[in-house]
Image (cartoon, rainbow, N blue to C red; front, top):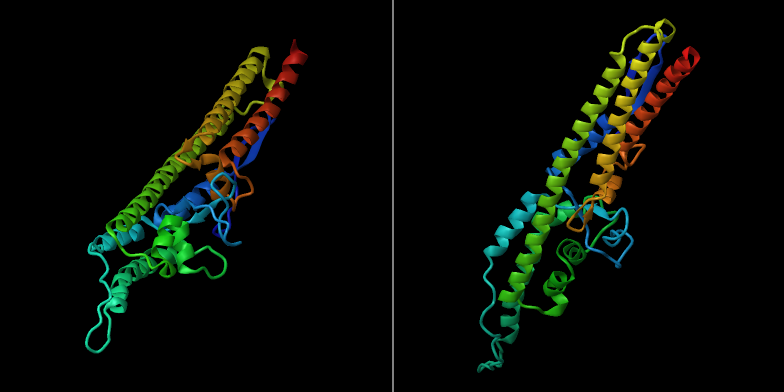
Length: 306
């Protein structure tokens, strides 16, 4: 995704003679991924429009890995504001009218009208385009970028080859497409914030699981009586249930959709630099497995004492 080196950090709880828990936590690296994206433009990741016009474009929204970096909210805002300053064409194009010199007004009139669409393309290039193509391999025509960000209708309306005019309906269509793009960015900003809060909460809870296991004491299992072993077994089961609950909650969250965005697809993209696509599930599952191993050891001691 961004080429940063992501490393996992250990979650460790060691107890003399009574089992050992050590597993990598993917959460610090996952939080680093989120911080990078939020720092870059606060809310940068948005789904691309579907494309069939080249290998550098994203796949349709229903497919995996369909995200491409989008412009920051500030760039979209600048483009929106600048569009409002351009007056649409309201009067009909002038009819051809020969002067005494045989010069008509039609070419001058058409050039004046097309200048407004040209201004819109230039504004888009100055505000939005540079961010949109940051991670696109190779060169990309301006109209293709407009299509990816604002849709086919806007790209066609602004294409020089169509001789379209910047009429009120065209201006309204650009407003609508730009507003939709901004709303997608705002939605992604909320998703990033929610995801970070979720990761931080999960990391805190898993650290508590390790701390709880560590706090069960340093006594060797050989030194514990039956009641002590039973209490230890029950305590580990409580921590296993915390891991299971965390996994259930995370799976429910992953299945949610926000508009046309799938959190599942978003997670796969966001954590592409990590060794796992689902850092909370991977860490909680690994910790649960470690707890289970220790619990089985306690269970073996209980069985011998029965």
